Length: 89
Image 1: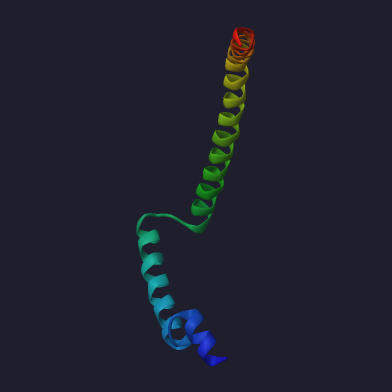
Image 2: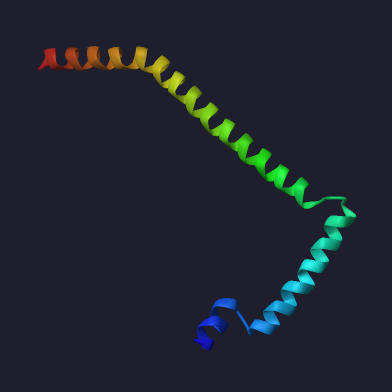
C-alpha cells in the first residue's frame, strides 16, 4: 500500500507536502503581486468557458447555414450530372 501511495504521489508523502507548500507560497506571492485574488481567477475561468461555448455553437450554427446554402446548389448539380452520365451509358 505504501508503495502505491509513493508511486501515485511521485515521492514520499512528506516530501510532496513540503514541495506543495513551498510552491503554493510562491504562487500566492506572485498572485498577490499581480493583485489577483481567487475570485478574479474563477471569474476569468467562467468567462473563458462562456466565450468558448459561444464560439463553438456560434460556429456550428454558421457551419450549418453554409452547408445548407452550398447544398442548395451542389446536390441538384450532382443529381443532374449523375442522370446525364446514366443517360450516356
